[in-house]
Image (cartoon, rainbow, N blue to C red):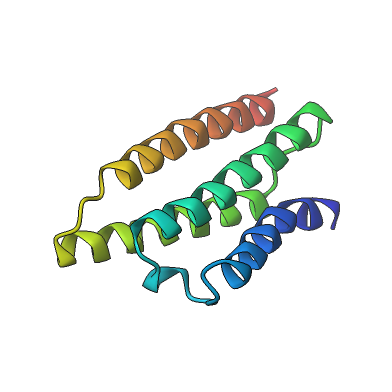
Length: 116
């Protein structure tokens, strides 16, 4: 339960920002810079919570991987939408690549802990 609450905080913070600044609940319809701000708040907040749990010697659960997958899926959906509309998506691609690298690092550490 503690992990769900810790991982939910960045999601709530990014949704509050989404409602306060662009005044919408749908991140898919946001224009490029606003979506990138929302997505960076979401991704950075989530990985801060992940590093915090990792530093507290908590194990990475399946819930964490679901959160990672949903955040990545949101980025992929926006990437596909941007490509279909012919918009520049370079920054989003770089964020998604960085997210993949960090996720692979955490997955490999999770597998190493399972082996021990």
